[in-house]
Amino acid sequence: MMKNVKIKLLYIPLATLGVSLLEGCSTDDVFQPASPSIRPFEAIVVNDVGFEAGEGTRTADTGYSTTFVAGDAIGVSVISTKEGVTSIVQDNVKLTLLADGRWTSGVSSPLLRYDTDDISYIAYSPYSVTMRGMKSIDEIKAAFMPLSDQSTAVNYAASDLMTGMGTVNASGGRSKLSVTFGHAMSLLVVSPPIAGVSCVTDKIYSWSYHANARTYPSNVEITACVAGVIYEAMPWDDGNYRVLVKPGTPTSMQARYMLGDEMFYVDRPYTPVVGRYTMFTVETSAEVTNVARALRIGDFLVAENGYGQVMPAESEKADLDNLSPWCIVFYLGRHPHDDTNDYQNGDGEPIDIHAYALLAEAMQGATMCSAPQGSYATDDFNGYYNTRHLEPGYQGLPTLLPPLSFGYSPLRNADGWFVPSRGQFQCLLDNAAFINAQIDKMKGFALHLGHPEDTAWTSTPVADGVHDVNVWAWEEDRWVSRNPALRGASRLLLWRVTVF
Image (cartoon, rainbow, N blue to C red):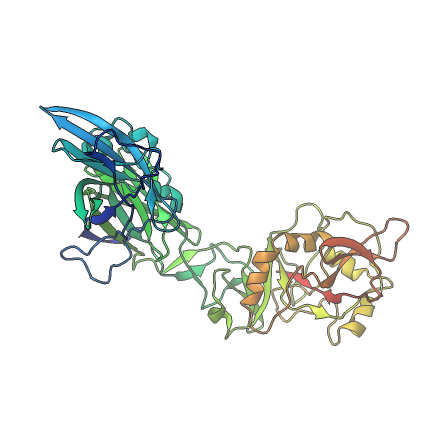
């Protein structure tokens, strides 16, 4: 479903960049000039370069500076123009920034200073071997194309063409080449939507969202479309997105993002201007008050008036502090192969399974009295059945976990807790980093899945004909066969799960 959004458009001029290039060579260098009027520059020093605030630009906008780092390279060509004929004297000399701040082209092929009136220096950044044979800055600009995928820092930097003419200066007996760089591309800066909206279910279920539940924009994609070519933007540290395009061609800023289960799309035309950046702010329409959102892995089930209500996975810790989080969703829907159990809600009525959820509180030091009966595959999802069929019966559990008994649930729309099967616990382990991060949002819970000092029981029996009384347990970093009535050297944990 497409929604309309508000757009704020701001044009801000880009300042030019000042760069000083110095190169030094001693009399011991390999290169030997053929004439006293042709000699290397004596040192290489690169000053910081950056955008200056142009007229009408807010002075607080300091995040658009450009700084060279060690390993960066620029290209400089020496051009001769005599009697209307342009020729290349030195072609695309590569200058690389060293860790100590010096620029070097190597002592065997230094950038040369020519003391004749027909000589000019053209410089550009970043360096590319494809710029050989270019006799002017206009040729460099025409040949350069920004990368279509600018979603990484490396690709973005490779798309930021800067060009400038050099002038020769001498000070204190040392020769210096000064270059003023200007940005040859146009920069698009997009501030994505961040405001959340209330979320609702697409129809009536046995669960609902909590009144405080809000969902926020996700799966954000910012692109620029130039003559049918899509340029993917890079997410910046300030939360904005940036993408560089060639100026002059009509362009569209495109934004796509999800709110709940709905896709929102924005397309706004503009004309990119050389050396300037255009800023768009994408705002969620005030008409969007709530969106449908399906249940997701990582969602929280909180206790509210005896029922389990859902808070979205993207909720922050502060959103949960004043609630009563009870469990975390780790699997959606009924497992298709290994779960044929008949689940009931707190009123004893059959329920459809929307999700399996982990109670975010393990019982420390707990042991099961004995192994479950039967034999199941190690990827089974029959923790409910296994727990009910503990040998000699589930009555042993209340003595370990008073006053709870199997089937106890404080929520009327969820079934009782049970010990996860190996398959269910493996599902948790496969997503442990995310589930543990969700646990960290829940007040008062500190235990984590897969801790190397823990042994966590499952309810799946080994039943290999030798260890019939053993169950599978996750210990340190592997599955092991353990007697559920015995304690080991590790910290014993009994995690519990439920369905709703």
